[in-house]
Image (cartoon, rainbow, N blue to C red):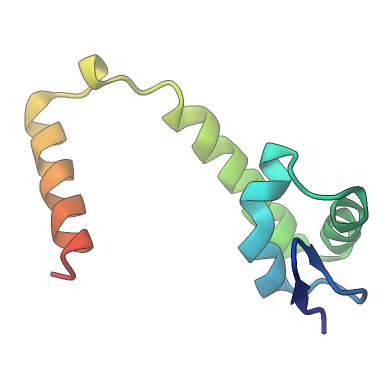
Length: 90
């Protein structure tokens, strides 16, 4: 099992949970070369994580195209209420 040390994981195989914790850094290109290599080694062996990374890539791409003008005002209000409720722990 790997352990997070400072800004890198200690040597060893990356677990699925660890991959999920650093996926944003991976997609942003912010991982060290050694952590990026370990991340990609894990993807080469783990179909579930590969799917998860691709789903997140699609989500980021789609959400980047949404503008406030493209959302129906009623839907926007409903989403804002849901997010406020979630943030408040409701």
